[in-house]
Length: 235
Image (cartoon, rainbow, N blue to C red):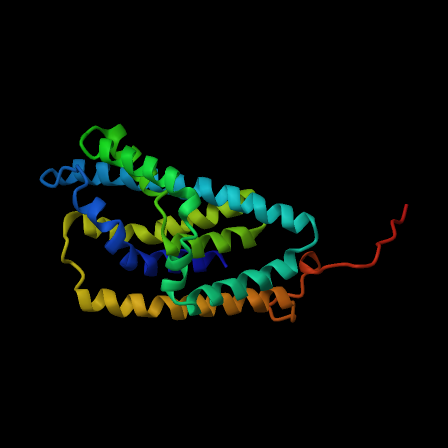
């Protein structure tokens, strides 16, 4: 399942160029001195990875709570259904209900901080740009967070989102130095492939929760089962 985080990050990075691309294009890195520019770019990515990992830890904690409550198996199925549903429901429906309105205040503060740090060229500024960039709302991040919840562990949730961030690094790094390295046609094709991958991932979550005894895909793990009968303790 952890491999899905890297693949999802890699695919989503093509989509993210449209949203986070403008930030990458104007990132105050040294594009003449390659070694210094590489170091500054690394600071930007470290900031993003820290933000993703922090969010992942929180959602991993949420999944841990559900796991301890005995809902792990049903949770995996529910999350898989949710991923597929989110792909199938047209975006205009979400826009109609404006589900992100409660966090607008937080998002505006993040954007304000980004604007301030983009005017600076210090190493701290580059790290901070990456960190606040990681908190910007993004549909692909939401899908990745579903995976973080499914890990049911704080450290695994953080690691899942860390790997998601790692998956975005190659494309986002290229975007910093070249706006046109990927053709519009290529980006469109990959963007169209993302929903297919998300549906496949959702199906894997459903299979995982069903516990069919299929190695690596749907393991019949006692930890995933929901017990309705008491277990006797033997002294």
